[in-house]
Length: 169
Ligand SMILES: CC(C)(COP(=O)(O)OP(=O)(O)OC[C@H]1O[C@@H](n2cnc3c(N)ncnc32)[C@H](O)[C@@H]1OP(=O)(O)O)[C@@H](O)C(=O)NCCC(=O)NCCS
Image (cartoon, rainbow, N blue to C red; front, top):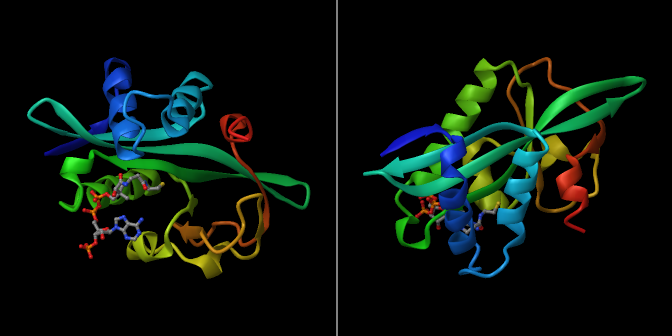
């Protein structure tokens, strides 16, 4: 299995992986639409696919968000969504996508990633509820977590997600 950045030709297969992972079958799927919209809006910082024998098994999207601190605006990253085909789950593909993403984002100079998800799962990658508590965000709560990639990462602030998230409702 390889992990690589998504390419333009992957879009349809990615939407299919996301739909299947989130149980949408062929029907409309908010998470698949979200990724299409983030891509269209150029709000994706990084998007990776897991591929085996030419088949896409998983996908992760990292999008731009902004953190307002006093009069400054600092860049951050959102991890969402993460999707692995149901029949390929439990084989470490989710882990491989998240860890490869973090390594690349660190190399790109990103300092902080936020995720809304199960702390039991994302805690494995170093995300913490405590790290997100000082940030003001519409998703703040018992599933909102942060992972600092650099000591220069902001410690607090008001978070604005990409427009595609606002349009999710
Ligand atoms: C969550 C998901 C991406 C994990 O992918 P995966 O390739 O199965 O993950 P891994 O193989 O790296 O890890 C599997 C482990 O994660 C655990 N896990 C999976 N989903 C979990 C969840 N929602 N909460 C807690 N643990 C979870 C599994 O129980 C397994 O645990 P184990 O290692 O102790 O056996 C995949 O299950 C998926 O696509 N789910 C549907 C979509 C979704 O919920 N995405 C995340 C929301 S953003």
